[in-house]
Amino acid sequence: MSEEKHHIVPFRNHFFVLLALLVLTVVTVAITWTNLGPYNTTTAMIIAGIKAAIVMTYFMHLRFDHKIYTIMVVLVLALFAAVLILTFLDYFYR
Amino acid sequence: MHEHRDDTASKIGMWLFIFTEILLFGGLFIVYAVYRYKNPVAFHLAGEELNVMLGTLNTVVLLISSMTIAMAITAMQRGKTELSLRLLYITIFLAILFMVNKYFEWGFKFEHGIYPSSEYLQSLSRGDILFYGLYFFMTGLHALHIIVGVVFIGFVVYYIKKGKVRQDRFVMLENSGLYWHLVDLIWIFLFPLFYLIH
Image (cartoon, rainbow over the protein chains, first blue to last red):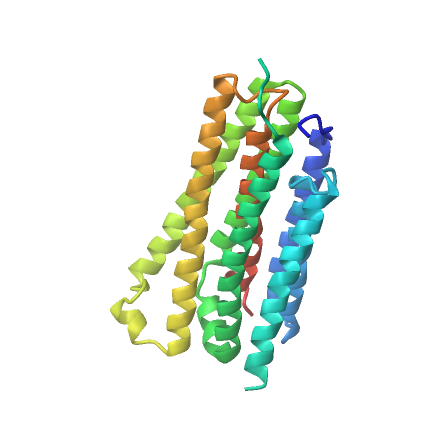
């Protein structure tokens, strides 16, 4: 399968991805100064999730590579989510 | 002579390794979540002691380095080997810059007597000990990954110079990029969880 076609991502696109990531970083730091109470951590985690998705989609080429990579990533994240949820079900209902 | 190579298999192998890394750090994040849930006040107060400026600076440094290594792949695909090498040098430089910041950040903590099982730390509450224990372990393990990443990228630079990594065969460069982005991904979560608790 070494003949698999490679998508070449232009330099400009990489730069725009970086800009988006930097903007999200500024937002997440700025949110620390506002008081959203218990929603601060949730918001920070949502922003981190968006940043991670951007990194995986564009920098890690998931968008341009074979679908099998994306499927595997989703499965692993689902496994992690399952363990996280089970752990907290245990702690909440102890 | 027929050359044996399978770039897809090579890349899937790298991804499988990345999955083990995600689960390793994922486990640590779960430990963090449970302890923070049990010690919310201590984590809040201890988190505010961390240097947000240095943390933010390192976030920016890592994000830029992720872009430069992604660009190095583009350059290689276009046959611009020199440019690709230069982008990799910048990536390595940024990685070292990250470590220098980390050195100062940990140094300040050490000066204040905060390091694993220090006398001062032992005198603090259980929540503080847990927070700093996780802080040193998780950012330390992450820093170890930075060092491994630099070595990995160093090897890629060597192979590019020997002509073994080139325009028509660059899966090793791609794999070093994937590893480097993983290091960035982990930091994306470490940063708000340790530095931005409010």
